[in-house]
Length: 132
Image 1: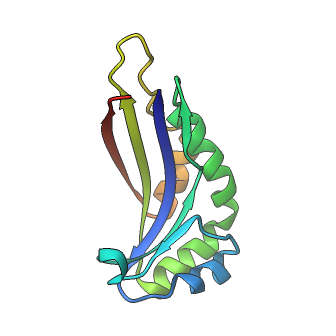
Image 2: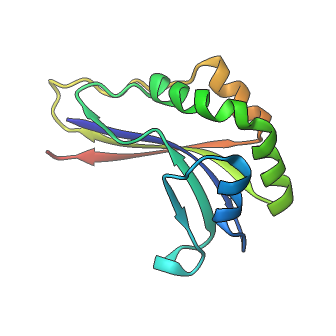
């Protein structure tokens, strides 16, 4: 099986993720505080959720995530400016080694690209081999 997760994160140095939660009005999937569990920065993350399936469709997963975040663009931009944050769309994939299984579909709809551009976000894709 393949596994995948798509999440949007705001990262910075010395900010309280709870402030982002109040400002954006979305409960984060997870947060990091600098110095805790070896975290090198503070982070506020909102995830599409982890998918375990034969077919992982990053187009679909990222589009669903952006449908939720896009109406919050102005407050996300406010948070980025106020707390001097960076925005990133993070893609995590565990790809099966079984040649009979499909590999993930990786790409982005124009609405996703437009949102990421509007908030100055980068895209990071991490891939791992899944031996199971």
